Length: 482
Image (cartoon, rainbow, N blue to C red; front, side, top):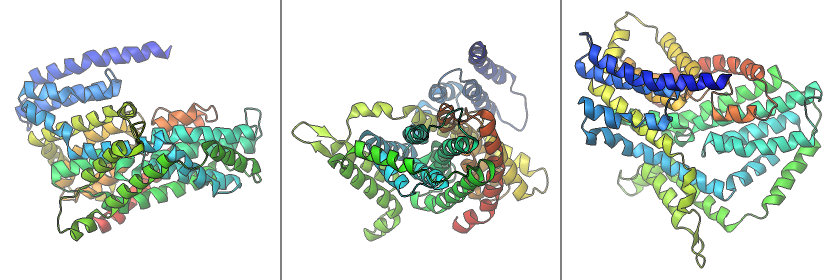
């Protein structure tokens, strides 16, 4: 019965998007907004309707500015298309290529298995091992790919223990905590680095394009990593000690599962070693970029150049010269999420249009004009809005719509935009309540070991904790570093 409703929503969105665009263009009342602003609003409404209803693929909707802005006189074609080649997009592309190379040669799986192996056979230790490993891998490759890799390993352990619907309470709770731990750790881990999750990259792009502020990989890491570790620790304690404690004895069978998986992988291959060298070198270059520029008395090296250098090296580093094989082949890039890159471009173009038409300034001034605003309550409200909205729609689409507005608010209130935009962006990745909220949530839900009410119970508490944590960090760690 739900399928027709879903199709109906798509058809409704398909029609109502352009209909609202035309209505706003024709209506355009005389207010503080100028005619150009109404054209931008009309285009933004069309995009939002299609994003929310998924009337068209999200990436396709992100291409609308290339058509709408030149036709309405907001931008020329050159101006409308330029953001689709923003340097931040190439930073993310390079990061994706590094991740794909790790996936192709199973380096990520070897790293994961060896990390889990260190945690022993204590049930809570196993869950912690899976969570830490998942979060670490998710820092560098997509949270979806990370979860897809980790889930079969976890299921192998639960199968070996014979956990099913007839199992005891303790075993069921162990399986539930393990599944939730993987999903939540994948979401949280992505927030530790710029390339870990798409909203981070979008935010960095807005800071650079709208404010001229460059957020480097290393500087982001000084905030992103501590927040990630704190949230990961809280999540682990909540699901294993408060909500779903298993109270099981040691699970000696789990170590055998890990050993079997490592044996199946065999000895580390030349390909894995070469991918690891390129990956580590790229990560070190990101972290030490400032020092490298100082050594050579230049400022030419940036994160995008480093990312693309690492990505290109994967294609030109030989695996078997006689056979003409390299670490990466172009055919493998079919797995690269090109749609996300287009979404960044569309979001950056929309943000530039909102800035040019003074929408960002007007919205910010209208909020600032309401009298004295408590900064802490404002931050909490913005974080809560982002956090709960991302349970219902794409966090990337939500970020590209909402962050420019938050920038306008911060400018009007004379608040450092970092203090508002960074916690709000992090909130976009903290979707814990529903299976539909993020791919990791949906993937672990498909295991059959997680019920919606179990995920919602943990998710609601984590959402509240996330709001409190991000508000505190917006007043402490973020100002201290930025």
